[in-house]
Image (cartoon, rainbow, N blue to C red):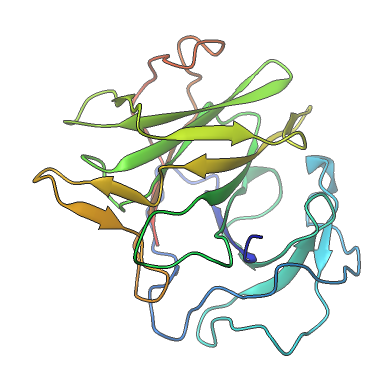
Amino acid sequence: MFRSRILISALDSSPSPTYALPFYLKPALMLPVLAFCTLDHLPLENAQAGLSRGRCRPGSNWRYAQEAETEKKGSAETGMCFSTYTYGSGDTAVEVGIAIPESATSDGPYDVLLSIVAPVDLGWVGVSWGGSTTYVPLSVAWPNGDEVMVNARMAYGYYVPAPYEDATHTVLENSFVNDTHWSLDAVCTGRAAWEDFDGNLQVLSTEEPVYLALAASYSPVDGPDNEETTFSIHSPTAHW
């Protein structure tokens, strides 16, 4: 069972914005621990995204950021609650959501539930699980017709990241592409633990600060139906 998602929204219409967003960035910012909640069915700002999400009613088991400007919301598709941080609005917003299992600990690897919602004008979105570009696992997602593709990558230099065989993604059925947005929900295996450049095991802490990064491009990937496709350099980036 997954903990509630921290939903990060990024991107606006300005060229190449760079900004900092919180995710375990301060001791006060902790993942909520409720796995499910009751929904009020309040839609997201842009209803055209095809989403059916709403706010959660308060619960005594919630632990969330007191310093960050977050909201508690829920997904009717997954039954999950998650916190949201919004940057940008309307058709220019990108949302990245993360949930971890209730049983996850810092002692070993665990699966991660990844959610990405992006405007159709965006060619691809990548999430760095180590907060940098090289020698950390990456999840790169893009639209392909009426479906969404996602592939595990790792960059061994500042060039196109290579496929990473030690991680996999299982795309969930509620992923979609419509006239305005594409949306991915996927269970990621091998994202929360990896060996760094020196061969040391790195595990994303469930208790201490963790730094993640987001990159995206308005240029489409070269072969959208090929999981090992190449793609152009990112333009917008974010770290949180």
